[in-house]
Image 1 (cartoon, rainbow, N blue to C red):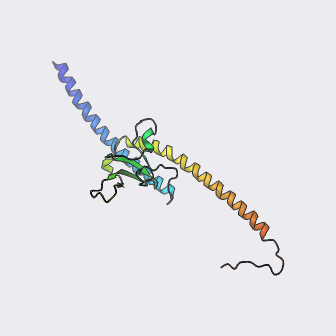
Image 2: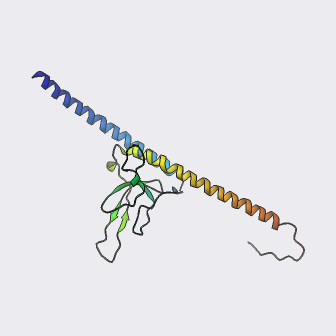
Length: 183
């Protein structure tokens, strides 16, 4: 009988330890999530993440990606699917901010349903969200960088073309050549 009493005592102690460890880990996770979010917003420096899907559907535009997805080891297949029905989903917006996204149903049939996306509150974050956010950032940042590189290359090509045009057209003009007035 003492073995059973000892096991129950061990069970109580183990559960208490697990609860304490979970709460400490959750506090660290929330701080890490907020640190990632802050660094991402700072790194974007007012720009927006490129290449994010439109999760709005029904003509509503909402460029973001789901953070909590169907797979644990990678960004899941539903990460880029429109928000549907009555679900609420933790998403990373094009501004780099975490929000909880859902649909606000119009009570009047003359009005359209619309997406609402308040910033996520700390108490709504899960311990596991830190891993999900890291996966999501590792998924979206390379896409964003690739698009920035493409845009920079395009701007460079345009700049080179403009420089060649200027070089050819601004050579010595014969007297009497008309030129537009500029400010």
